[in-house]
Image (cartoon, rainbow, N blue to C red; front, side):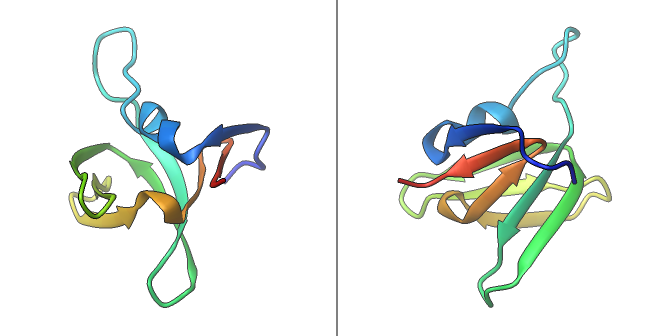
Length: 87
């Protein structure tokens, strides 16, 4: 994963996860986040964020191998080269 060069508030992180290319397809992205057990995890070439639960603040991500991963917004540390800030 690249060293972070930009900063963004966690409330705006969905813009990076739902970015589209010039043909209207989802851009794959890399993400670094904290797991429930406190470890830091990285996922590369995540295809898209398919759903969002507003009540819990959790997103469901589709990985490049077709698996799903649930991530809380406030536990996201970095998307691509952008550091996600919680204030």
